Image (cartoon, rainbow, N blue to C red; front, top):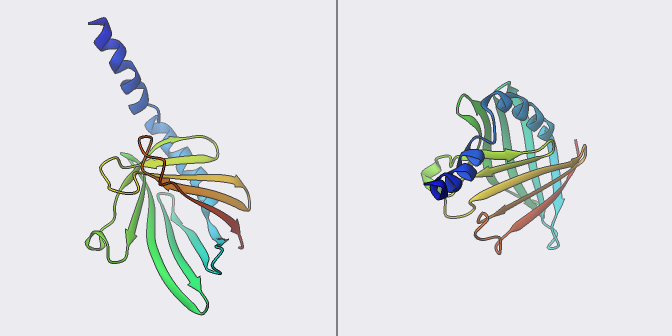
Length: 159
């Protein structure tokens, strides 16, 4: 019995790591994403993420790629705060029948935000780290069980 109790303590601690009262504060900190972020890739391609605060419960994001004079939309994202938590909800063109995939915020610090969906094929985890006012790092991967396919992004704020 004691063994089972010891097994459940980490599970209980993990699932209650983010107090629902803290979600509003966390969501306000995510407001620091607002603006346009740019990352140059070796091939000459430029990636952009643009974030705009719609209201106290919604940030809207869009990512796109610029290659030469061709601009290609990558995804539209809603960052949503509600009574269930904080969610990163991307919609990728021609994937998932145009429906959003929900990633729940599972942990955060003052500058880092971890969103996870263990049921999704890839990615299972999306992490944003606000390094400074004008530097944003992010990565996607297969979660703790598979970091071998980690894709990293390093953005500079341009406005």
